[in-house]
Amino acid sequence: TVLAWRNKAETDIDEVLQTHSVFTNVSKGVLANSEDLKKVFGSDDHSAICKQILEHGQLQVSDKERAVQQDAGFRDVVNVLASKCVNAHTLRPYPPSMLEKSLRDLHFNLDPTRSCKVQALEVLPLLQKIMPIQRAAMRLRLQVHAGVKDDLAAELAAMSAVVESESVSQDSLVVVCAVDPGAFRRCDEFVRQRGAGKGRLEVLALAVQNEDEDSGTSSFGIQGRGESGVSIDLSPAGTSSERAPALGGKDLPAELCSEMAEVKVDGFNSKSRPSSARPKPVKEAKTFKCNTCNVEYKEAKEHREHFKSEWHRVNLKRKVDGKDPISQEECEADPFMNESSDLHE
Image (cartoon, rainbow, N blue to C red):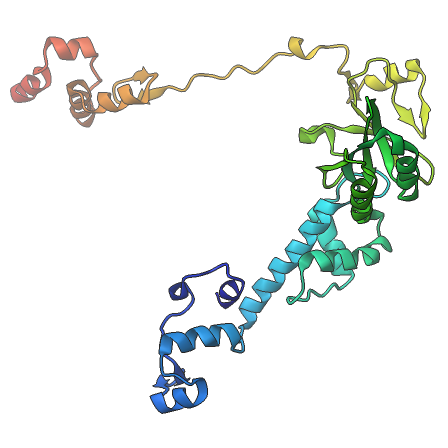
C-alpha cells in the first residue's frame, strides 16, 4: 500500500503500483502527454514521476480501507493499554475485550496521524474515571556505590518506589525495586551521576503484573503498604505450607483454612475421595469391519487390503445371489467354488 511505501515498510514499487504510467483521467484511460509532464514535474520519466507522486501526492483512501485502518489502530491502542496497565486493586492485567468496551463507551476517536502509544497514554486518565486502572510499575535493578545508600533510599522514597530486595557486596549496593515508568529517567540520571564508577541500571520487567495461577506463570502475593505503593512477595503463592491465606491483611485460623480446603460440589466431598481412586473411562480400540464377510480388522491398512482380496470378491457375488458368505479358509480351499456352482445352475 501507499502507507507502507511512505513508512519504508515496502521497498518494491511494483507491489504498490499496477502500472508506471501517469494519467490525466484514470476512469477514461487518458494518458498524460510529455509536454504536460515536463511542465508540472520538470521531466517526462514516468517511473520518477510515480515515485514523486507516491512521496508527496495527496492520498485518497476508500471508506473500506479507512475503516480497516481505524480498526487496526484501535486494536493497537487496546493492546498497548493491556500490556502496560493493570487493575489498581489486584495488579492484574485487564483483558483486551474489557478495555475495548470501555473505550467504545467513552466514544474514543482514533487519530490515524498520531502514535497509538501516545494516544493510549492520553486516554488513560479518562479510563481511570470509570474503572480502577493504572500504569504497571517497572522492575529495575540499580547498582551503585554503597556510600550513597542513604541518598538512593531518599530518592526512591520520593518516587514512591517499592524496594523488593537489597544487598551489599563489598562496596557495591544492589537494589531491586518497582517504580512508575515515568521515573525511569530520574533513576537513570541518579545512577549516572552518583554511581561513583560502579553505577549500573537494568530493566528486569517493563510491566509488573500479577498473573493468574492457571495461566502457567508465577503468581505473587500482594500486600498493601500505605501510600508508598505495593510490596511484592517474590515467593510463588502456595509453595509455603506454613502460610495461611490472608483476608483483609489478617491471617485466618488454621481450622478455617482446613475447612476452606474441602470443596463440596452437589454433596460430594472432593477431599474424601482422592483423584487416583476415581474410575477413569476406558477408551475402546477402534476397529474396521467388513459387513459382507463378517470380519473385523484393527488396522485401516489391513481393512483396505481386504477389499482387494479374492475372498471379498467371492462374497460380493454370493451376496448378490442371496447366498451366505463363506470363510477365508473355504475360499482358499476351493477358489472356483462359486464359479463352478454357477455353471451347474
